[in-house]
Image (cartoon, rainbow, N blue to C red):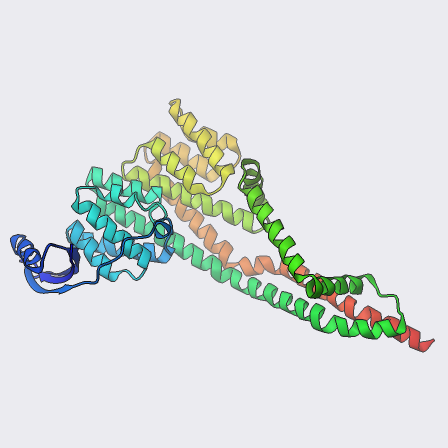
Amino acid sequence: MPAYNYKAVDKYGKFISGFTKADSEAALSAKFKQNGYTIISIADARERKPLSKFEIFRGVRFADLNLFTRQFYILQKAGIPLKSALYTLIEQTTSKVLRQAIIGIAEDIEQGLSLSAAMGKYPKIFNELYINMIKAGETAGTLKANLERLMTIGEDEERIRFRIKSATRYPIIVIVAVLIAFTILTTAIIPRFANLYAKFKVNLPLPTVILLGINYAITKFWWLTLIILGIVIFLFYKFINTKKGRWWWDGFKLKVPIFGPLIMKLIMSRFTRIISVLMESGVPILDILDLGRKGAGNVVIEKVISDIKNNVTEGKGMAEPMRSSGMFPALVSQMVAVGEETGKISELLLHVSDYYNMEIDYTVNNMVTLIEPLLILILGSGILFMALGVFLPIWNLMSLFRK
């Protein structure tokens, strides 16, 4: 079926444009006139190839999805029909994968599928939270409000990610610079000193021997070094993807100084916001806890949320298992307890999420200050080791010359 780009005006003078398929230009023009639109232009569009099997399971950038959600919300707020809004978004989206997914969604809707069911075909683009929010909006007639909530959640997470990247950029640059200096030292400078030391038959100190050993491994057996490094990374990746390994790795991440508390705050902020938003959207509490568990991204926290769900299934509240787990801060469990008593749990949890966002901002703003002592210790140790490797033999040679 041919594809067309169109521009039209409705009876109120509102301009619309987009992409659609029709049997012919005449058929498309007749369809628009029947619906009360005045055609401005219709032009042939290049046939868009369907997503390959690889692309279907490929995600899109977080920023692209957030922009799609914001534009979709604005179009719905403006009263643009669902299909027209999707066809407009096809032309506005720069991501190839997302564009093709929107085309597929629009075509599925034309064939009678719901928006949530059509989006469910692209799990790498639209996660379970996104699809359930859309489904709840369709059921309750609050699609516009739920899109606004999804937009708020997405933009909040994007802002936090951007701030964390900005805060960690300086330490990463410093560490990379030291690694480059270490590589140059071991491959270009140390070998020249080694030739000088060999002429005088001086016993080399341990730091120099280690640096020479690293140089020998890099220059003579670089391929073996890469193979060993690759095997170690592969085995570690396989280990952390086992049940036992994932449990150890996620528990370890929560205990890492500076970053562990930050990860916990991120999880708490996301978990409380998801519960609050989904409760307001009318999603059943057991489904909410399932989505909160899957969105935690940490099996240790997931286990606690599963216990909370079991408690709720038995007709009990959420506050007690939160308190007894020891994983949730007192603030969260207390707010949940008050919310259960007053019936305002979603409102209180939204305040908790905002509180954690402020805590995250404070931690991120001071991250460089918090990391500096550890960074200075690591860099100082590395520089001291390299200096000893270079200068200790020189001092030994000076002692030999004095004799």
